[in-house]
Length: 236
Image (cartoon, rainbow, N blue to C red; front, top):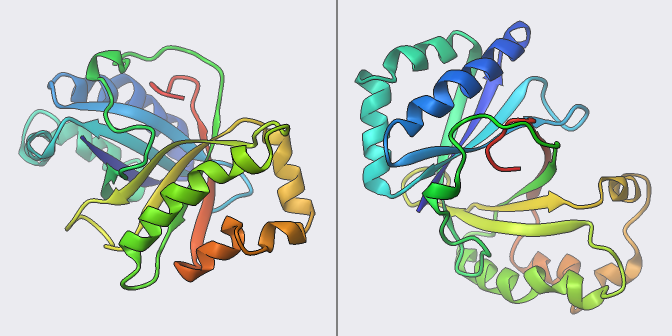
C-alpha cells in the first residue's frame, strides 16, 4: 500500500470550482481504474497557515498502481482533467508515504472506500510532520512506536483523549525528503486546542521518561497542521 499526499495551492477565487472538480470529476475519474482511490480532501484550517491550501490523500494499491496513474495523468484519460485542475491552482506538491511498523493502519480495503460523494459531519485532523536527526531515522521510528504511541493513554487514563493517532507514515524511498515522518491524528476534542494555544506546557510533561523531553534525543523540529475534512471527503 502506498499513499500519495498532495498539497494544492488553490487560486482563491477558484476555491469552490477546484473542490467541485475534485469531488465530481477527479474522485470518480481515478476510481475508474482498480488501483487508486481518493481518501481525504481537507482544507488547511483558517488561522493555522497559508490561505487556500488543500491537502488530499490518495490510496494506491501498490507501486504498479502508481505507475498506471502516472500514465493516465501524463497522457491518458486523466490528462485533460489534470490540466483543468492546474488552471485552478498555483501549484501542487506531492510525496508518497508508507506505513510505519507500529501504525494502526497497515492496509486499507479498496472495497470500503467510497467513490461517490456522501455528506457527513466535518472532522479535524492534526497532521504532524517530523524530521529526525541525520542518522536517527530508524531510532526515532522505534522509540516513537514504543513510547509516544502509548504514552497518553497510560499517563492520563481518566482524561478524555485530545487526539487519536490513526496512522503513522514515512516517506517512500526516492519520492521526497528521506528523513520525514507523518503522523495522522484525529482531533477528538477540538475545544481542547484552546489549552494548547493559551497555556504553557506543564512542567511535568517535560520530565525524563516523558515523550516531550525524551524525543529531543531524536528530533527537535516538527510541524503541526490542522486539516478540516470536507463534508464529502471519502474518509473523515
